[in-house]
Structure formats: structure tokens, C-alpha cells
Amino acid sequence: MTARTVRADPDAGIPDLVRSLGEDSRRLVDDEIRLAKLEAREAMHRTARGSMWLGIAFGVGVIALTAFTIFLAAIIGRALGSYWAGALITGALHLGLAFVLIRSGTSLLAEPSYTLEQTRDEVKETARWVSEVRAERAERSDGRHVAAR
Image (cartoon, rainbow, N blue to C red):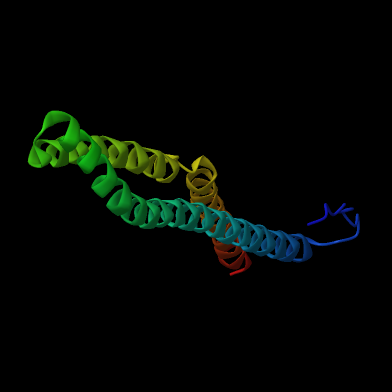
């Protein structure tokens, strides 16, 4: 988007200025909606990325932990003389690792998007402003019609 320099025509009448104001207001609302869409797309991209990392962590965890569980349970079980105790200790270790992986994935999803909420507020403010300008314009035009009678 590029900034546009507007020069007021000294010979322009009030209807022309009001029409220009309406066009500028519509363009401003369109630009803010376009910005909101871009910010929503960025937020979805970030969410997809966090979800992808959670999925990768889960897949790697399942495959690696299956093989590592068998190995570790056998080593601990041989050292303790009881294979069930080795399997129990190994399971507890893997739950701790899974907790760390889940926390790192959910921390990516927990980062708030401040710009989306700000843009939403700006769109509401612009819509309110445009409706006020239209109401004032309607009041002025009603006043002119009453004065002309």
C-alpha cells in the first residue's frame, strides 16, 4: 500500500467533499479488512506450525520410545533382577519426557496474537466513525430541506 497525497480543490462544493470523504472511508475500511485477513492468515500459519511440531514430537516419541522402552526395561530389569520393575521405571521416565515435549509444543500455540485483536478494534472504531459521519451528513441534508421549505 502506498500513501496517497490528497489536495483539496478550492472550488469543490460540499457534496463533492462529502463524496470524497465517503470514498476515503470505504477505502480505509477495505484496507483494514485486508490487514485483518493477513493477520488471521499469519495466526493460522503459526497455529499450524505449532500443531506440526506436536505431531512430529508424537510420531518420533512413539517410534523411539517403543524401541528405547524395550532396551531400557531390559537393562534396568537385569540390574534389579526383576523385569517388571525395569518396565515400570522405564515407563515413568518416558512419561516425563512426553511431558517436556508436550509443553514445548503447547508453548508455541499459547503465544497470543496482539495485532489481530488490535486490528479488529480498529475496524470497529472505523465503522463507528463512518456511521457517525453518515448520520451527521443526513442531519445536515435534512436541515437544508427544512430550510428550503
